[in-house]
Image (cartoon, rainbow, N blue to C red; front, top):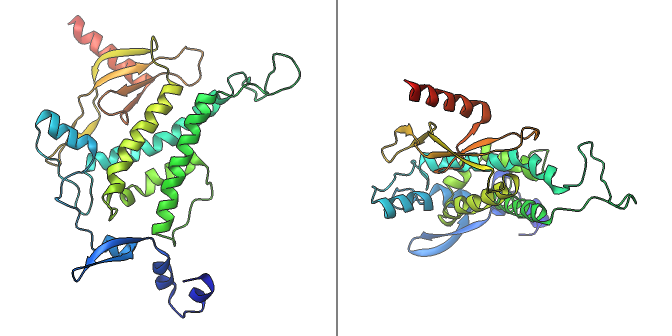
Length: 278
C-alpha cells in the first residue's frame, strides 16, 4: 500500500504500522502465508527448545555434552544472550581506540602532520578503516532489519555506529534472541565473533604483546541446567606500553566477552603469588 492510500485508509496507527512490518512465512490452515513480524513472533515455536548458537552446538558435538536449553520464548540460552549483549557493547567501547589508530601520524592534539610540511593530512591506516567500515555496515544492517520489523520504534538521537551498537546491546538483545526467524540469532553471534576478532587484531596486535596468565576466568556463565557457574577459561593479556593511555586488557580465551581491567588482574596475580609462597 502506498503512503497516500495508507494515510487515507482510516486504519488505526497500530494497524498502519503492522502493514509496514517486514513479512515472514508462516503456515496458516495448511497454507504458507507471509505475515507481519508481530504476528510471526506471536506464533513462533522456537524449534526444539535448545540453544541454536554455534558456540553451544560445538560444545555438544566436540565434548559430548548435553544440549543447552534455550530461554523460554527464545532461540538462545541465557549465556549466549548475555554474550551477544557484551559483544555489541564491545563495539561501542572499542570505537574510540579504532579512531585513535585511524590516522597513526596525527598528534594527540588532533592536528595532522606531513613529512613534507605542506599541510597534507597524515596517511590513513587502511586496515583500520576497513575494519571500521565492516563494523559500520554490520551494525546498520542490523538496525535496518530492526526498523523494518518494528517501524514504530525510534532510533536514538546519536546514530553513530558505536552509539547504535551500544543501544542494540543494552536494550534490544531479546529482539535477536526471540526473532521468529531462526536464521537471525543463528547468524548474529558468529558474525559478531568475527567482527570483534578483526577489531581486536587492530587494537591489540598479536606477538610479544600477548601474555598468558596462570589464572582462570572467574566471571560467570550459565550451564545447561540454567545455573550460574564460574567460567574457568584461560586468561591472557594484551599488554601495552606504559605510556599508552589505552592501557592493557585481560581477556578470557573461552569467551572474549569476558574482559578484566588491568588493576583487577594485577591483584589476581599478586594473590596467586602469595598462594605459591605458602
